[in-house]
Length: 366
Image (cartoon, rainbow, N blue to C red; front, side, top):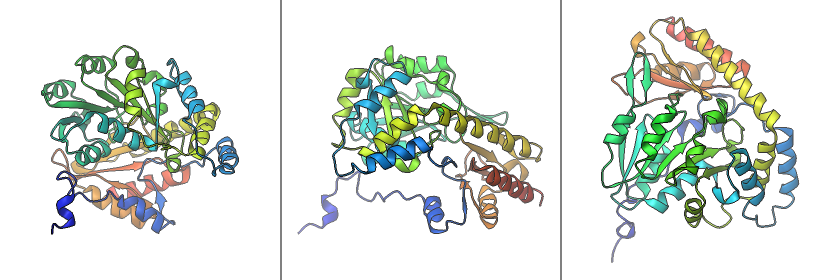
């Protein structure tokens, strides 16, 4: 008799469930300040809370296909209609559906690293081959390398994915470079999870009207502050979105998240306040720490900031440990570019940001 392990498909066998240790820590020890997962420090707006309460009373009913919120998203992005929009249980599910629709075992996904870990996770679960193209660390900055991305293309390349702005480096790729990649015809995902912090003028959504292979992904977890609601979406050409939507589980987005999302999207004043707060606090943190010798700060257009303390002879994991002693959870970063000094933090409340600055200054003073 075969063992149960013998029945798993080879590319799934041995893969472990994804767990975020820092998020588990935050829920286990709620007295610690959460500055590690690019969450928004502000509670949902009153308009969103009203929608949650109203549609919570209808949780006994199946949701519709989200035409109201999809139409609103299309309107915001100047697309023709709801057929240009696919909804997901967070942008993580959106990536999963796109990858499932395109990738066969052994085929390649090109990502530009360092980047969001979900691309690797969804590639692996489908038996794909991940091709990681490193950014260039030069002049105290991490630069995109579009030439290297294009050079990595083979006849097995099925997906190219680039985050804009990139997580964790916080920078944008030049608009003309997106056109170069789009013109290859290869399915090209542009992850715009943090674009609202800089404004939709930085979005590449216009490319979806010129290139059917371009798909934009977004989330309401960041600037809108709805990480716990799990609401993401994709933007693209109608027939592309229509085909990928066939991979969705029926009723994948619940009634409550759907109508809460619509309320958030309509609350433009609430979004503006969150964006203005975030951007001013990013500037505060960066400026307050700019005079620490040997601390490299990567100027960010998101709600997170990446640091490298390697030039000062400091390890990122030690900074994270020191911050936790001060009641703060920072995010460790794997060793890269020959430095083990990388770490990052998420913008928190005013109080938390000042606590973070003080903790980092104290650590680097010794």
